[in-house]
Amino acid sequence: MRPAVHPVGRLLGQVWVWPALVMLAVGGYRLGTPDLWRDEIATWTVATRSPGDLLRLLQHIDASNGAYYVLMHGWTAVFGDSTIALRMPSVLAMAGAAALVSLTARRLFGSRVAAVGAGLLLAVPSEISRYAQEARSYALVTCAIAAASLFLLRALDRPSWRRWVPYCLAMALAGAGHLISFSTIAGQVALVALHLWRTRSAVEWRLLWQYPLAVVVAALPVLPVVLLGSRQSDRQLGWIPTPSTEDLTSFGEVLFGSEDVFHAFLPLALLALLLPGRRIQAWQLLLLAVLPVAAVWLVSWSGETSYFLGRYLLFTVPAWAALAGGGAGAVYGAVTGLARRLGREPRGAAAVAGLLAAGLLAVPAVKALPELQSVRYVGSHNRSVEPFKAAALEISAGYRAGDGMAAPLGDQAWAMAWPGVSYYLPSDVRPYPVFVARSAEDAEDLSPAPCPQPEACLGDVSRIWLIVLGDTEDPLGTMPPDQAQLLRARYGAPDRVTPLGGLTLALLDRDV
Image (cartoon, rainbow, N blue to C red; front, side):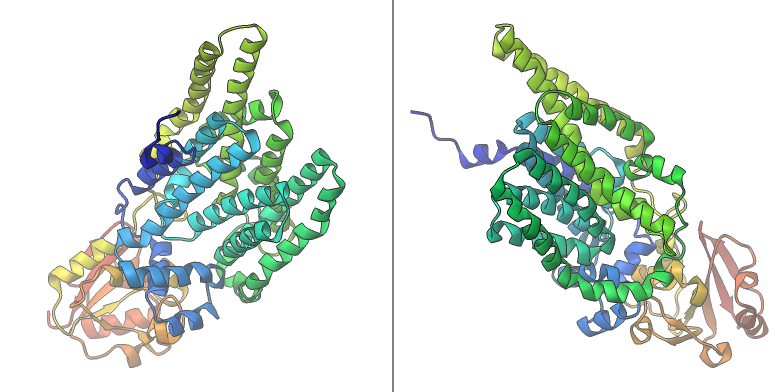
């Protein structure tokens, strides 16, 4: 009679537990640093609005992130809006993705080595680590697609409505979180086709109508997001360039955050595809990883709007991790199988195979170390930290009741300077909004609406904290001419100018 296993020991013996714990540790490490950058500020300013204000905003901008904002609204209502609180859902979602990748690899390859290795490998790419620590929807979408992949495999094993329901829910969540994630269907279709070819069972042909029906059901809740998002695409995606062929061939480096790490994954993937074992399952994962990227590239290359961006396709990395874990499992299986054919002791062969598999898994982790040193970088085009907090500290230190604040709006609202600085200002520091016609809530936008006639919105303030983009000794020279002329006439030259690295803060005082 076997001794009873303690529940904790039973839990720790599950293949998904350690990958999830490792991802929690990676995502939670220094979670509060650096400060929020402009995309995360967008999450804060939307999620903390009233439900009515939130829904009205989505009719004008960011509908593609609507489901995420609604979830974050509920989260912040319970846990607050600190930097750690805003980022924690992404940590939890990516830990869930690691667990799901392990379960997927176990189902496909039937190996604990493959399962644990796959989940651990998901924590290696620096882009995964980055978005596990960012208050945006990408970690949630990655988790949802990883769940949809696992649920699809379960449904293919034994098709029934009870198994299709969780697949539909996961796909609907992913699509509502970010529309581009629905491109995973390109890989899923190939996966289903390979499954049908492998089984060649008359019973399995019912999948020809069950799977398309499940996709349609999953897409129905996403249709409002599609309709709203299509009207907003020019404003939100116009900055993404049309991709070239070179962008497609070098996309692995973008997706993994490092060419070295991507190239370290490739041998493990090849081992899964070539070594004896479950090659068809490995090819299913490869198609699931590659075809969505190819589909988005083709649409972006041939259409008017480009969607080809690394973080938009982050949800394909779990398939790569599962495939690479399958490579480690294939090495383990090949060595132990060879030992048995040679009449060797299985335990010794298993130990050797385990060491080989562990060594292979360690290569990507070692390759990733340089990128992990700087994993928490922010900004679309550079690695500089947004100086919102620095500006807020300067204003708070010198604030007087009745002071005003002016920040970039209109064509420069993309910088999120106004809400970004406002996030870090104490609750008792609320400067008068200079050159603002309507608040962000009233404007149903991410930032306040600028005043078309600056003089009408200047207010009667003796001092103005002026924020402009870039580092400059002449902040008035970077402003719209009508605003600058008005400020020069009433306040003269700035009393002091403080470049902050990306923003410049100046104090205008008409009493000086």
